[in-house]
Length: 450
Image 1: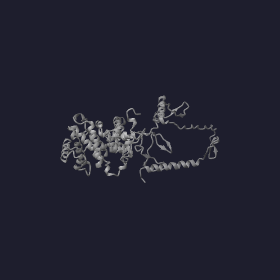
Image 2: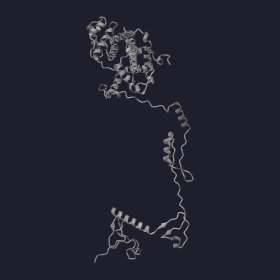
Image 3: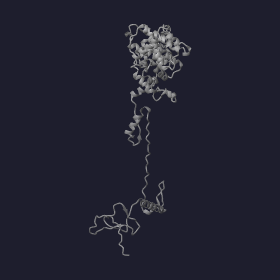
């Protein structure tokens, strides 16, 4: 058949004939390479008449399998026995020394150096420093080539500091946890948990807008004692009508705000108190008292028309602003943050009403009075701690900020039994309110107390 023979590419410098390389002396063939031999084809040994085949993944796998099979067949022909004690190497049962005709040099045993695992001891106090040192210098080798780790030395100052903290108990003191006071009201829609924090932030923001300033010097016919007598009488009226605490605190707020902007003669002071309680009752109560009830309680000192006219005057001066944050709205929240029992709750209300009856507390804002009442009550009942992180979070006041106002409330408690104004003392001496007024005041908050 007249087909052109396929000549496989020749390596550089000559052709391969019978496994031997011949020098190629043909002109122009010196230092030439086959164009097809660029690394993507391979000569198939033992296959004649086939061109160079591209190396594919499957073809590479075939070549590898062939090579492994050839190596296994070659190893089966030569049986090599190695004597560990120094016996001569045997090839097909014949001594290698006799076949080669020369003595075999003695074998050298391979010395394998044991690998030393790196051990790093880390102290709990210096874990970060040692880890950093390990990254910078992972192996600290001696001259003999064996790796050893080196523990970092502690500074003398750090040792003394650690011992001082341990002696003072600072390292073992647990961090105080803040209690979720609203967790129990998760299913109560009236608690308004979605808005309660924003509501009290707003109360704190606007409480000074409705807080009356010091006005007693601007009243020519009224003094602190007269105001105290009026508030003491209104507390008895409040109990007789069985009104809510919201009504009582709003009544006192209306009186103070009105007296701060209007001069009132002495004979009309009780009329101002009646008008303020009538307005507060209409605002807070479902069934407020009637005007005739107040006329009767005042022994007909004022008529129905006078009470209604005073009510209208007060509303005009206050610009009909009755939605104000009184100490009561803060007391409800702060008592809840104190996780109270019945004794604590009654003691807080007792101290707050004592403060409300005395004019001296007008210098403090409503949230300060409420916070100080809680703090003074906890000190009176000897609760430990007297102030904690939960109360600090919800009140916004730290313990040192409350000391002055709390001392003022405790001083009122210490003189309540001998005071002329007995309405609050009698109210909280009752067993229904746990007789908290009869307890001893907090000595630590009294002048000269320990």
